[in-house]
Image: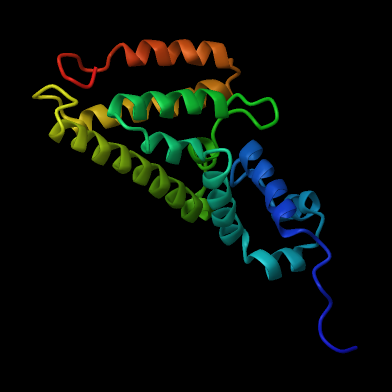
Length: 200
């Protein structure tokens, strides 16, 4: 036989199935055998195509960022800081309660409870959450420079506050909160937006 056999599975579809499994059960709660079964391939094919479990998880997180969590990128492109934050929170309320997806957020829940063997995955999730908060902080710092925020408002504290609300939305969704309930949470959070500036 000349040459190797072509892959007998669709890579994109396999990654979607892995994404759902990691999203539903977290990194540590998802075994390689479970992944291989859900993806419709055997473990050797999984390792050959995607690397080890940690490497597969990183690919899944990239896919998650481009797909279900794509609203984050859209939010950061909004023209005012207030619109950025509201789009971020509304997007979280929508994405974490979609009927066609597991409840909650993969990057918030994926590694909350993990043993020493899952430290790399937990660190990767922490890195990504920290990068998201840093991007929000930079946007709010620019808002301060542009006069969108009142003098004396700390962009670091404000970004951490809204990041905490954002992550809380994901936790509430995982516990069964509805889109409508979470939208009301966003309403309350947005009423805390600093007043007294041209950005209101």
